[in-house]
Figure 1 (tube, helix red, strand yellow):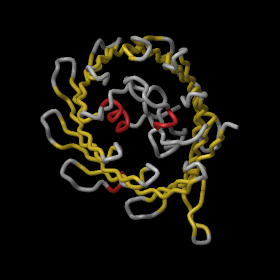
Figure 2: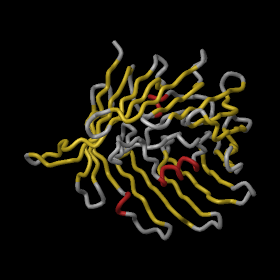
Figure 3: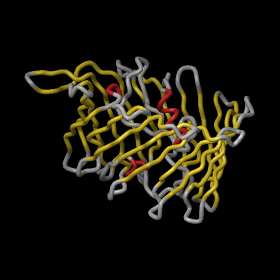
Length: 305
């Protein structure tokens, strides 16, 4: 079963996601199966301006991609793949949006599956998840065929959460409200954007409208997010992440900091890539804070003919 990491859930809430949006897919051994946030439903409730391939910085006409994660090992002076830890295979439609996603464990046995259904305008209508013991489904409704207005989440066919979304004049999601059926609790997220439409600030409130968390976003000239800063409800610094990208738009450094500004070694990495002729990475090596390779990742892409 997919194990949802607390930090990832926190980041998902900050990004106004539903509970299964953007989890890290992991095998039964808990290994993150891509070292990237592998989205499983709609990444945003804004109108779909780019497809899932573009969101992953992938180029060309792609039918599917398989990402396999291994322990890194040194062989004859080179970093290569060691023991397998897990993986993900994603299949895409002709519009570049995912229609199926399968996660593997270290034996490459299926752990979980996702299936995605779209309407004639290529809006996501349903995301359905299943593993050995749980079925999860989220349904989506839209206004004017593009703007997501509500989503309903079910676990084992039982409604557990409902989301509503509102937008500013530019079409950016300005607010979403989550209503939890069993607890009857609510939470609210409010978003602010710059003139380019880039998300700059997210504030999360509890059901009493008390601020719980604030996150600020900084971008480079290419529109890539280079810093996330998280603050508590009383505006105390809690967490910061800084990122650096290569010329192809892939992250080559990811540094995490505590609230007092100290580097968090356990969550700070750099990455090295090899690319195919289409400019998509084929191997990705992760190095930890001590600059030791600790993860070797393969991406096998099947292109449309």
